[in-house]
Image (cartoon, rainbow, N blue to C red; front, side, top):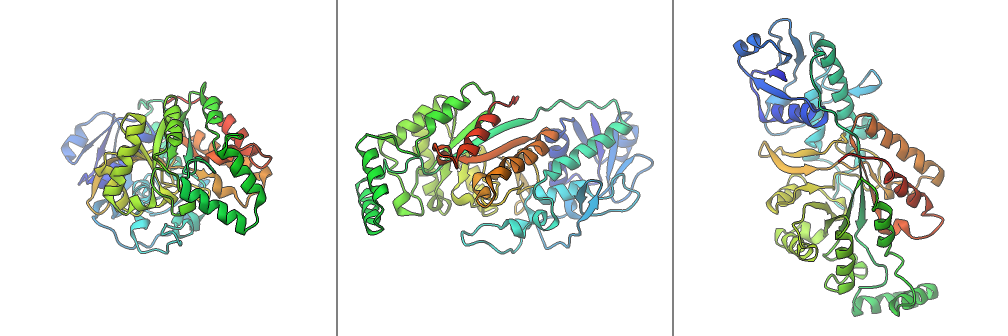
Length: 432
């Protein structure tokens, strides 16, 4: 066990030390604010604060973890070894920067509480983040820092025991549009036919009619292939369905129809089902609860995992709603069209509410990318990008998660890269 001295063990301090030491490194820790207890302790120990007590392993702090609330902070990012760092401290510190404050800043999404430019959907832009501006968006930098911290600890305390943590693969499928033609209802189908007639899209009219008459399978219904691919895999898969209305009326499904319910039930027999909360639900806790109850009635179990429609996260309100609804895990921490780690980590972390200064029970699962982030990337380079980021996650024993869409697996030359990648990810061994 590692004993940590700090003059004031604030909520922020205990939160970030627990994440780095326990969640990432598998190290048992304890805190003390008693100098006498710290001096008397004969085992591995460090201090965190403004000044060192003696000759112990000392990590100098900045003010962030001793404060409450949030305010604009001037941050200077510098190169450090093969990575980046910020919150520089004095030479008396065992590390040249406050790793704990920097990690807290990134995990708490501190910058998303501050005034910032949003995109047309109301989302925090990747280009507004310190990670993007400083060139470390594609690195799980919090985990990289944590492993450098571990290396330093072992140098001074080789007797420390770290519980082995294996890297994990957790693939996700966004099934917001599980069917292209079926399950739309009479009115939506008629509008779609009219739209195709106006555009003289005869091919779409033929395909729609063939599917509705039962001569062809709906092209978006790739779920049998997905389930057959992962049946023998030890890796996790979660498929998310939208039961509320899409922002586009014509794309919305009739969630009361048996076809959609049957698809969900069939997948639930083999893999985890998550809920894609609709845009309307994100504006109303009552609607959110209705959608949650609807999917729980279909899968006959409590809902544990969610994603927000359009990957919209308005902090802290959206996450507070999930906590009130007793949703355990959220998978919205991603940029839809930009590759990289929104919270700069590849280890699931508890949501810290900066308004209330509390650690919540909601577990946030960071996602490296969605397939939509590759729309302007050539097919030959897609795999290289993904392999690079996946390897950076496996190097720090993190969890590699990527969001696919069910229509990524339609049989076409364009989709071959996604089908092959999905197959390869689910062949990799992962210990959950």
